[in-house]
Image (cartoon, rainbow, N blue to C red):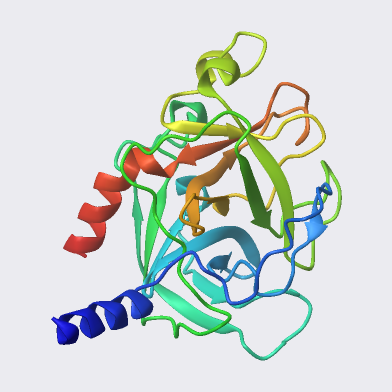
Length: 262
């Protein structure tokens, strides 16, 4: 019995997720503040010739991102990135071996949903104190209205503004589907396979696409509950137009099947 316990503990430690070595600074609510370096260790920069999108490391050789981020260019991912303008030392740059877009994604209809893709990496990332995995939610796990979640990325600091050079975070409370789907909010564009979060002055912005909506569960771990999908065309922080994310919990069967077959 003792041997079995030791074995289980060892496996749990190795396959841990959602527990950063560097605790995120979540004490202050500031619109788009710089994140504490390496406090979101599953955050990925997705790059072609230059950074284009974000992503989330969910297994040593798998990254979750948005389908609309994928083009024909050969991609690489950069892990342990903080300041885009500096080579800081711990970065890991890994080429993408395979890009798998959800079969029901329609790039002519973002609001139709299914804005999700998986990237199989050429080699596994080295998991350390600055590169770690995010937890995936249970299939159909529910979020509550006003639940505090954080969006992270290097997107524009505001509509039409400059791209962030250091990783940013913003507190985006969840907006329940019953509110987000009201006619003066997102209406029928908000599907049950999406998560709305933020609104008013806080939102994701161009360049944050594909990155995670990080939500802390009661077990103390961080889960990637959303993949950044779209904002209102009039501006990133339009009232009653919160940022819309692909709801990861709705796609767990597809994610599991795709990862097991590739």
